Every structure is written in C-alpha cells, then in structure tokens.
Picture (tube, rainbow, N blue to C red):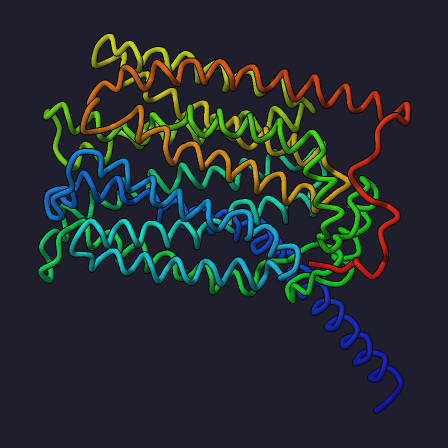
Length: 474
C-alpha cells in the first residue's frame, strides 16, 4: 500500500469517525430533549388521567351499577385527597434522600396497578379504599417534578416549562372525556364489562409506559445526575448555569434547616395562595354533574362538552406562562387569571340561564393557569435553597389539597345542592377575592424581605455554616 492510499484511508476513517461523532452527539441531544422535557409532561398526563377518570366513569354508568347515592360522589374526591395528604409531606422529605429517578417512577408503577384494580370493583366501599391508595401513590409526582425543575431551569425558562408540564392536566381531562365517550359507544357490554370498567383498563394500559420511561429518563439534579442519555459535558453546562444564578448543590434536610424553613415567610404566604387557588378551581369538577342533572344530553355529550373548557384552559395556561417569562413579570400576569376566576365564579353562583352558566363553567378553566406562574414565582424567590423549595411546594400543595378534601363536601354536596350549587359557589366568590389579594400579599412581603436582606437586617434561610458532613446529593 503506497503513501497516497494510506492517506486516503486515513482521511476516510477520520471523516467516518467525525460523522459518527456528529451523529452520536445529535442523537444524544435529541434524546436529552425527548427525555428531559417530555417525561414529566407525560407523567402528569397519566397522573391526572388516572385520578380524574372517576368523573367520566360516574356519569357513564358507575353511579347506577354501584348504587352511588347522595354525597358519595363528593367522597370519591375526598378519599383521594386524604390519601394525597397522607403521602405529600413525607414524600417531599424522602425526595431529599432518595434519588427521584428511582422514587418517582416506582410511585408511577404502583398507581398504574391500582388503576387496573378499579375495573373490578363491586361496591362503593372498595372504590373509596382504592381512591385513598391512589391519592397516596400519586402525591409524590407533581411536587417532585417541580422540585427537579427548579434545579435545572433559569427564571427566564421556568414558568414556560411548568406550564407545559401543567398543561397535561387539561389534556388528560380532555382525553378522558373523549376516551370514555368512545368506549361507551364501542365497548359497553363487550366481554361482559360495562363501558366505565373498560375506561380504567385502557387508562392502565396507557399509564404503564410512564414508569418504564421514567426509570431511564429522570435526571435527578445537575449536581448528581446519572442520566445515561445526557453527555457529561451537558451535565457540566447545566451545573455552571445553576451556579450562575446561585442554585447550589442540594443538602441533607436537618432539623436545624427545617426550623429555619418553618420560621421563614415563603411557607405561609404560598400556603395561603395555594389554599385559595385549589378551592376556587373546583367548579369544573361539577360541570358534568350539572350537565347530567339537566336530563337533556346523552352520556356521549356529557363526556364531550367539558372538553371545551379543558381546551380553553390549555391555551390560556400556556399563554400566561409565555407572557410571564417573556416579560419577566409574575404578579402582573397573575392578576389576569385571578380576575377571570372571580368573573366566572359570580356567573355560576348566580346561574342566570343555561348559556350564561355554561360560559361561567367554561371560563373557570381559563383561571387554572394561575398555578404555574405562582410556582415559578415561588421557585424564583427561593432560588438559593433547594430544600426550602421542596418543603414549601410540598406543604403548600398539601394544605391546598386538605381544603378541597372537606370544602366541597360541605358547600358542594351533590345530594343537597345540585344542580346549581348556589350557596357553595357564593362562598367561593369570597375565596376568589382572597386569591386575588394573595398576589399582593406575596409581592409586599417579598419586597420587604428583599430590602431587609440588602441592609443585613434579616438572617437568610440557608445555613451557610452548616457542616459539610451534612451535604449530599438527593
């Protein structure tokens, strides 16, 4: 082989290696995009699908087959919420000690198994028990993902990502309605199973892919990520990004740090805001119940009509977050969904007629975009303390869920107040005003704290002198 041939082959090998490296890099970046950004959205989709399908099942034959009476419909949500409350705070503490890449997919797998179990229930007591277990198993997911997001994204990116994640809730509710409508038409009675039982089987089949994907996809946090799909240089880049905005490496949660978090202002103002928000977004859960009570529509239509509200919620949620990140405004954007919520709440409370009431329920969904912008603001205000973010988000979410465990039972009793729920929605009008006020409370307290920090008059929540022995990744 002469020198010219050797040079030619060497050049060919170099070109081939360069091509392979470019291909490998492109493939890994594509995998990073798919895994990093879409696993959480799909996971939230199946979480909401597996928890909200009970409404579609109820109006599609479960009520009659299981002889569900009076206030038992409200208890379906209450038992789920109680399970959610039991699991929420312990879960957030575990999240500081167990890798999310193991913990969150394991929870997904277990709740998928429970979803399949709903297809075989024979009485309402079994449904209550399964709803409690389902709530407990689903409790780690949303706040866990938000905690992870706070470790990867900058303030200019965060609200949009949370909105995309949260938009899965609308997609899940819409899909559940379409799926139940299709199943009721095509599978009701097939194999001796009612259409509503087939709904749970199909939801389980859809959900099983979440945990299988999650064990591979979840990246933990930039400082301790072992994600096989992410190149080492990409991990280093994300660590540098977080260091620039002073998002430090996670630490083990100690009693000393917990005391500092409990005595710091974010915990209380965000609890208040989340309680208000969780309560005033409840009307949409009763949209199908109101439609069914009119005795004017088929089961297919009752499942289909509320998807219009979900579609509106999807569009407006994304719009609020894009505006919030693009304009770098938080409280100003929060005023929009808070105002819409109050208007919609007044309409459904008054119930002036079919068209107006339908519209009131519809625009209630346009107020759900309050949540992603609020959490982006919370993460931004607690930017330098991952443990505080985890606890505040978990506890605030827990209190919000705690209130919707009992408030609907008291003021939205289906057996007593359906179909108009005038008293319950009137109370919620007042809570809607409180939600609006919570925006300015957070603004006032955060600005006051910021001024005190600049003048050195307040101790920071992060104990910078804490022993290095206590530091570890989650």
